[in-house]
Image (cartoon, rainbow, N blue to C red):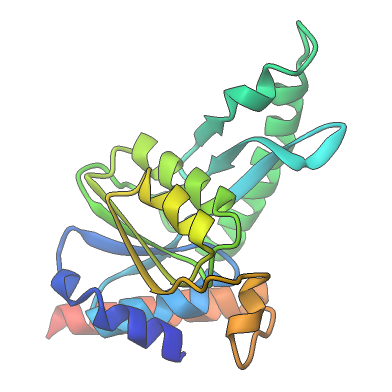
Length: 214
């Protein structure tokens, strides 16, 4: 994918960095992340993020859960819940179950992420609002990553500013003044399926392992 290779060209200072790992947000970020990881000679993994939606308004995020068991809450939203409500715990339990299912689907028996002291290069196919990526950044921070880099092909002005406020470094190919959807900036914007995610992760592991042995 051209977007991934172009991003890699802006991240050459991380080439073969033994502390760095490319973390793609499934599903759409995985094809982009694969190209970044391959070009830079870095391992590829996924950071699964699940939004915690308000029970009465699922599109409104109370927070998010992410790979490694990290939980991020949006206190500005949570405070509107009725006193004594267990909505957060109920939604969290449901989303953690789905996160575990996806983790198992993508990772199999490989161990969970260990990011303490490492550099995480978070990759997605683009940012419209930046809400999911912000949750990913904050979750990765809670896993004690030493440095967090966000790399995306395209973002709205507002999303880029939002992520710049929480990440250590942001690399973005395009920040158009008029932005309506991520897909409008791709010639092809096919939906990524779980099988493709698993295939690209396996291919990346094979390439990285072969390179490490030479």
